[in-house]
Image 1 (cartoon, protein in one colour):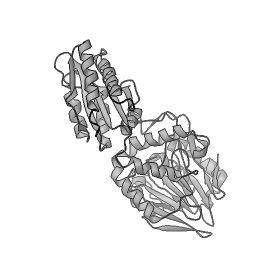
Image 2: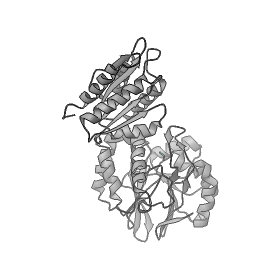
Image 3: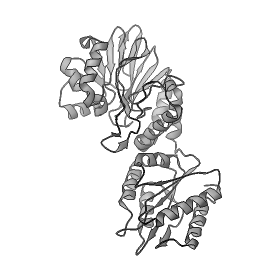
Image 4: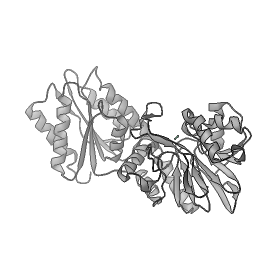
Length: 398
Ligand code: FEO
């Protein structure tokens, strides 16, 4: 399948409607994904990126229908991760001498993964490749967005930014363009991608967006390596990234808990009541982490100003589902968020303070003493949990 972005630029990737897990099993992809590769035909003809390894043969067969492989003057690899470079060994089997343009770090990652000494040409920000017909490719390093080897490639004349992972989403959409996609789904999947993958690099991303702005490159199309291509108001995703990288939060509190015999769940429901009664305009969302996809929960946490986190105490600690989540939260290095913890216990009751310690390490401000309850909550305890919830947001400055 080929899709025209412009008469001379075609998408030649793979829409993977069945994908449900990505990065091993670490990222849920409820709506599939796509691996976007592009062919540009000017006086010179180039390929930008490839697809994930399972689709290598189909990709090369499909590409050969689009263009004589031997007529390719260059291959641009924006990022060495296997979802974009996985078809490179199969392609290079056909055209082993074709030059590959990529960052110096990408040469390291590609040789480390494929153990091949291809015809590499390292590039850095500002380097160009002349395509003829008055058009050029301009390379822009995107270091740590999200790998050290990442870069973006800009096509002058058509004003297309091939941004690789940046501005992408795991969203298999047969329309392939944002004006043909479900707008709410697209926004959610772009946010989920950002929250779960790019959050640790917020500061770098902010600088990179400023650097991109200073390059003053007009953007008619932003063509990422996953999901739909932004051609209608393409700068909307750049504006969203500018907001997301700057300690983003909505008027939302997310309660995340696990429970053994419903005691901690009962507290969670009472705390939610308290929060809502204190501020009816507040969005309050409640998730049992053992029954909810962790990437979806992280997305809600990313939107929140306050996380209220609960677990019963088992073996002097929190339940393992919560420990796994908080380990992931620590990796993400979110800034400017508050947290409070709670939980039921039978004997010792350490879980709330241990969760607070992990959240503090993850960069959250702990704004209340933990709410602890021994055995099942009484009516009086349920009322106390409502009051505790109300007080979490009693300060209008919070
Ligand atoms: Fe889509 Fe970092 O690979």
